Amino acid sequence: MAAAPGALGAWQAGRARLVAACCARLGPGPRLPDSLMGRQVGPAMWARGWAPAAGGAAPRRGYSSEVKTEDELRVRYLEEENRGADLKERVKMNSSEVGPFVSKIRAVINEIANLPVPTIAAIDGLALGGGLELALACDIRVAASSAKMGLVETKLAIIPGGGGTQRLPRAIGMSLAKELIFSARVLDGQEAKAVGLVSHVLEQNQEGDAAYRKALDLAREFLPQGPVAMRVAKLAINQGMEVDLVTGLAIEEACYAQTIPTKDRLEGLLAFKEKRPPRYKGE
Image 1 (cartoon, rainbow, N blue to C red):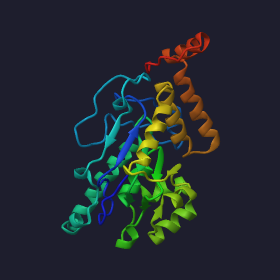
Image 2: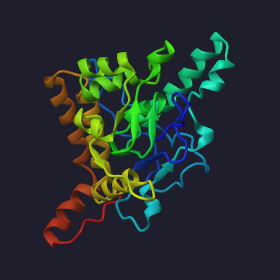
Image 3: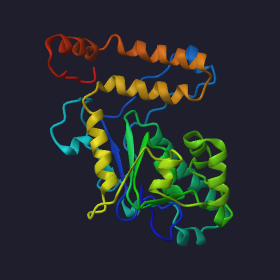
Image 4: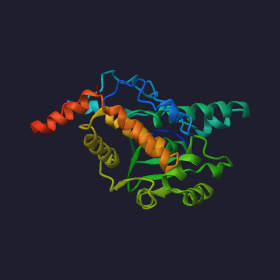
């Protein structure tokens, strides 16, 4: 995600991309059995649509792994009018307005984190404050070596308010996350890769979209897989990371069970037998 120079937590200026690797009609997704929901496992909340983005809502279509055009990678752009916390805007707010404003930002970021498809943040420029919090809500992050990212809120005598204090420690560990937040340090792509903040780092190209192109390559790797399996795999991983191993294994079992009655599972077995690519429909 790219942030605007001089804007703390801006979600985009120039080039901010969120790549979702499944065709999407986003509706109620798989959920855990009630017996697990009471075992300190948060509810499986799925977004019912894309987070607001310029250009209107994403086209609706059923789940499928058959992709005919790049558009079906469901690339979403967070345009300049969807910025997060512009400092000039913040100065004009009174104290009573700040809390609700940050709550709305947090809600949108949480919806992105809960999308029932793989999401990839492509960081080709700046991702500072809310920009990095938005990237942290994605499943995978890739960055250009020249990118800059950090949670810099303590410089302004505030703390990350869009999930940064929770997601950064989960991504890179508590001690290092504290160091970065306490110091408001900004990392480049190579440094971010070294601490595990991003999965891939690339030399920037002349077009300035090296991370974006890598994100598309990853999305193309994900697309052929079964859509139902992708949804429940994400659910199992996300929920399992929040609990002990025994409960996590129970979550995995519950999620696996949701793939057994699907037509896609039978199609996968038949395709393997017939030595052809499977044609999954998300059913």
